[in-house]
Image (cartoon, rainbow, N blue to C red; front, side, top):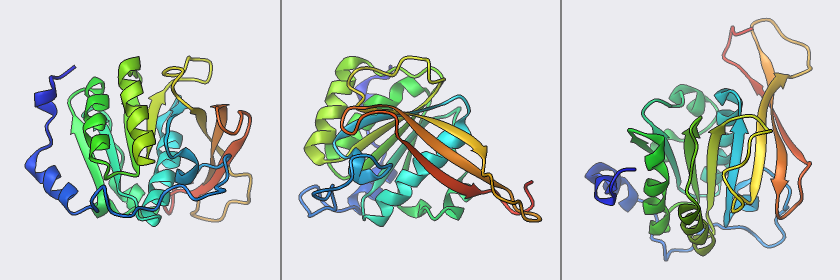
Length: 226
């Protein structure tokens, strides 16, 4: 784990954060009566969530669905990843994500991401923080407690992306919602030059709405991918 001094925000990132609304400014948060069982930022506000997948593609697709939902609600988003893992920016942009408004933090090792997320969460500027932890995911319980406290204080959501199957244990008992991401055939006629697939989040644990529900998105791959 890197020392705290090594995780101070660089001037370039600090400048980008200055452009976001003040933590004291009015923000779009979870509205009264928002559905408990939905893959939306409003349903995850104030919580720690974990999205697991054996392969990264489905998890990334569903994570960027939340990113897009947050951006549409006017909420800044932070994406934290290690050097060995990254998403493909053109795919995110093609899905509607505003890359210029997405704060991306890259660090040498996944173990450094929770501490960096804590720095960002304390600013109160983010409605959503996504930590791409990869296969060696581990977030110590004291850190989970701090992140959960900050998520509740600022009505923000923290999403952990992990690479493992549904039978593996979650990151910990403080994770309020855990889902498994899968990619499946769309089950609709394929048109020439167009590929379609479903990304499904099967909810294994949900402390608010109860487990067993799922969220499904029908996606289309790049032109010519069959």
